[in-house]
Length: 306
Ligand code: EPU
Image (cartoon, rainbow, N blue to C red; front, side, top):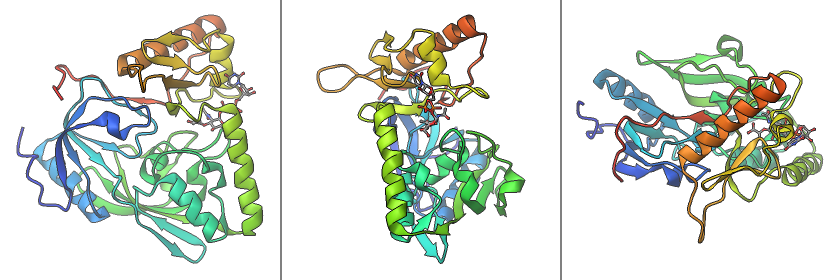
């Protein structure tokens, strides 16, 4: 491999960084080269350089929807976590990709702007949330986007409108593009009403989802007109365990890591096993093929030693 260890961009590099420290499931072996770009232009320059050098690169935001492999990731993982600036421009918020969703929701609330309320209690960062169109069953973050700035394979940086990108339910359709910045257009609202609505979303979430355990959110997309959680539940898999992983007994579309304290952590293999078990059971019982929402990075041919 060429020389990915040399980083002319403002993007500090760590070698063999444990991905378990950067995913909400607390699972994942080491990343061979782990970069943290400081500004959007450093992210773009780094992507262009790694592409030219032929170094495979994966993007990691809040790690809230990613299952990182036990054996680690050869090549580069680019973490957007330090790209955390957010700017208010009247009724708009301009956010860098590492702005966390709680930070985005809080900034909108403080500014008396509505639109982001359904993201209350959702982990993750703006870049990852746009890549997968995070949100609820009937709403996604793309619904509030006016424009984004992206890096494209080949090294082009350009602005795009939502209609050009064409996001759909739980898929931002970025197709290899990387978000450098997003402009959200929100609506002024009475802050007290906004706060009350957020509190209600949070109350419902806390009542129906395993919010106190490590998970990566919903493992499957909802099939049209149905709920993946309902189907996995009806297939009898609530509470099913493999190693340290469990199909949540609170909400069957969540796979939780029961490890921590005295208990050993779940492995990525445990989680993949439960994903496959749920897919097979739902297909067999109901003839429905579940589509994964959880992004499962492949295991390397040879595990990297931490
Ligand atoms: N249900 C069951 N058993 C379960 C879980 C759910 O029978 O174990 C039933 C519920 O009783 C309800 C129906 O399934 O009748 C739908 O469940 P819920 O209201 O919890 O919503 P969901 O469709 O499972 C969606 C999003 C969540 C989002 C919530 C609330 C998807 C795949 N999931 O869940 O998003 O938080 O609505 O807005 O679209 C995520 O994408 O990671 C995620 C957590």
